[in-house]
Length: 157
Image (cartoon, rainbow, N blue to C red; front, side, top):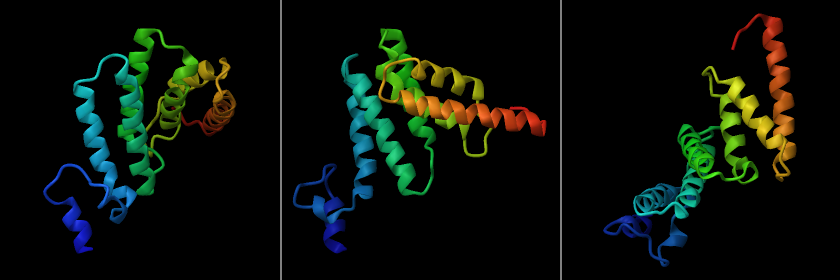
């Protein structure tokens, strides 16, 4: 325990000697800080990769803490989509972000999600030849079922 604490003191980086002593979860915040700093000097080619990595890191933290969604990861996916749509990136390349945002909107942890936006994003991905096409189609089917149940209950979303 003391040796792991020693490895974290005095340096903003983790040495190879100390890395095995730290759990992967302990390094996630440091990785997020490093990628956030990298965004400051990133160009338009590097930025999408860094945003995707930040979304992934925040998702890992959420999963490690028992949450199924991460608002921070969703925010990075939104930024990635905005940048990709501005640059004309094909939908298939952005499929992961479209699906992540749609999943967030479908189950926004007690909050009222935007099911219309989720449906739009899932339809976009389902119409591509992306490997995530089947997942988008399945989520869209689940969304339609949930919308039908809500209509029967008289619950408006």
